[in-house]
Image (cartoon, rainbow, N blue to C red; front, side, top):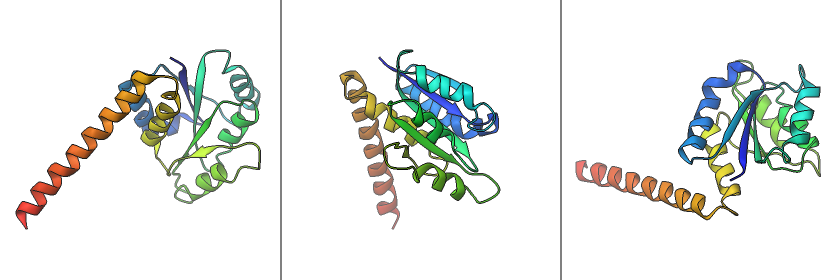
Length: 162
């Protein structure tokens, strides 16, 4: 199975990023986690993205706050899918990161999930990898069935109370 790289711009993003890492591990997807900055380590970020396919990665998840240029820098150096996770910062509640992530120029896409939507980034990565991994598709279906059952149980409880 292809690996997923989770790259964060700062270790201060780790509390949000851990949700992504944990979800990938739950799916039993091999994951590597790194701290690379679009601004402080641009050479290293570019080198990572440039060699990611050859190192067995299938998707890169980029987690960054504030200006959030990390996803775009990574996308500039690879044709692998990049999923951006805008991280909420104290400055503009993550809107700056969201806009930096989604407003990519034509030809260099970065997919995006919600602000602090790290778990959804992992699920989207799993969906991408499931195209060539039938066992992963089954895990995704099982997760959805579990969510469905949970909602139906909550519906039954609330409906019975009122």
